[in-house]
Image (cartoon, rainbow, N blue to C red; front, top):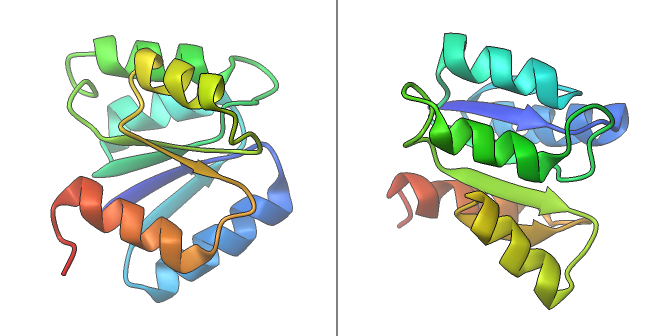
Amino acid sequence: MRVLFVDDDSATRAGYAAHLARCGYDVKPVGTGGEALVLASTWVPSVIVLDLGLPDIDGWEVARQLKAGARTGAIPIIALTGSDLPHERVSAMRAGCDRHLAKPCVPADLVDAIERCLGTAT
């Protein structure tokens, strides 16, 4: 399964990407919303893990554009962000995210969210 991991913090990207790769996922980590939009439409991941606070295009707009795309509209999106406030969760879901996790997130919880989105949870 392919995971597009989008986060502007290089340490966060590297840490989660390494964990997901150890769990058997094919992971592409990127640091901007623009990179995410391009890679999502060309590589077509199984799931996207998306930070909402990105430097170029915020994650809410990235999610909206992905959900509107013909090739990307059905890809599940997991918001992984520094805020766990109720209004942040609601706005993430309204933008098209399927799940919301707050950072710092235990890597096993991220894997669980990915498996639930993909229907592979045991």
